[in-house]
Image 1 (cartoon, rainbow, N blue to C red):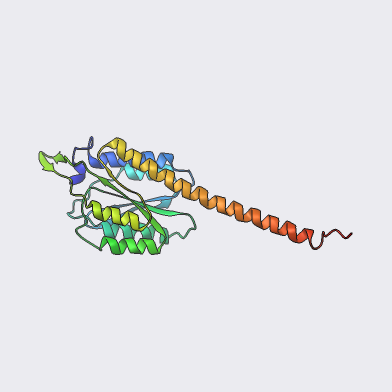
Image 2: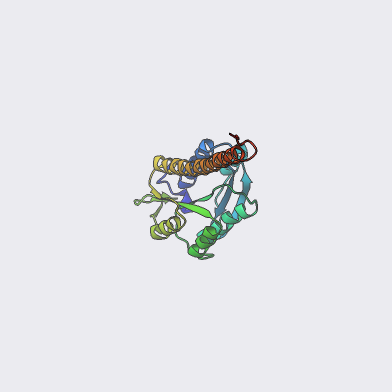
Length: 215
């Protein structure tokens, strides 16, 4: 229920969905995204796809799960397994968005190690203001485990954010999108460089063998 808190308007959940849809809009069209939601357990809402319309529709239909608990470790395992179900040489990253502390399910650090073993980067976004918000006139305060989220991100070379406004939340998504786009660009640059070296190598071989000029 904490995702219904009104310190983000109209609620943390709706603000997160709005920012996630904008993220889908700005990533390259070839990017494949999947969606995992979690409370006391995790649920794979969408397998990897590059269909932006399907992604945005799935995000818009996310609703609260009526169960207590925050299973961050389970969510990380489920998200990592989305990549394993569709092997690819593309860069792999998880954006973990939460407003709570892990208190059920698998140990988050063990799940992080599993993601790291599968060459997955984890970016962590904590969504909550220090002032907190209210749900049905009940005051809710931030209970983020910032140390844990920071450790999860750092150990996989990811980014860590604590956001207290919709603007900062959208900015965090944009920064992640830019960093992942940079990784893809760098990977392509290396491929082109290797291709150029290979071509130069072939040219040298031909010049010094079958096309060698005899004085």
